[in-house]
Length: 345
Image (cartoon, rainbow, N blue to C red; front, top):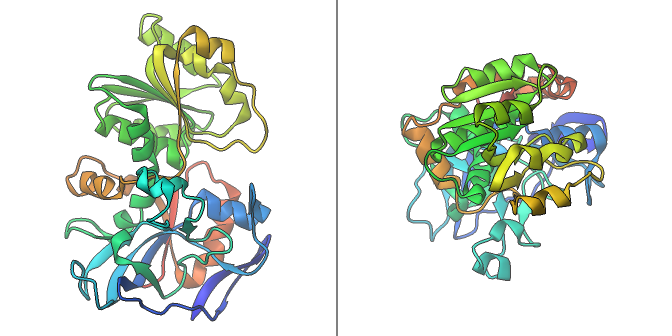
């Protein structure tokens, strides 16, 4: 089948590739319609690795996807041919100790699309377990279905934060995941979310949502804005979604005493971490690695109209334009949030 293949660092090709995709009794085959370009896809393209995950052989990219079921396994009862679906891209060993703890996202044996050596979904069809395939309600488009995956990261962050109704949150970083965390925080009960970045364009997109207050840190620090707006108390929850090493130094100046700091962004180098500041406030520190048990909840919020992700899709390309789309994503246009590729359009 034809697929978008990362041949090696910096080299993409649309070509035929032989893949083993037999449908097992508990699997479904999905005809792919829409795939979002994630920052990890771009990072593999530009750097050839993320941490210990190294591209050592050609790999199909893409893991944010939606499509239509075209074949079902013999034991599948809750999904049918013709169902429009989105898919959770990580498949764990459900017998693992991590899975039994309800934390299957940290199962060392998890097989995650477009994470070496597992192929992704920028191809005509894919076979996937029915247990990790979710039917799209009629009012949710394929484009929105392909956005469930990144929004699930925001949902995981909000769940880790243990938000209470009326909380004030602050988000460091106004990229796709930062905006997803802000939207999930609002949906989870936050009264207001401050979000900071250097990009005026991305802040304008985030600020178009009711309840999100953009903070351009070239003008004023997030810590000073939050302090002023909370009478010096601080934010109940702080989400670090930038991965910028410089951002970690001030996290505990933003959070209130006994508040929570949730780490989402992955820094590429060691960071300065204010242990004294954390202890002085007895701040709770949480971390986020992908997500677990939130995919259906993320989809439910979108279907109910509680979260509108449509404004975040800032470019759509045909499958034959996939390489152009990745080049644009790698260029980092300040007006871009999420680019998508129509495999079947």
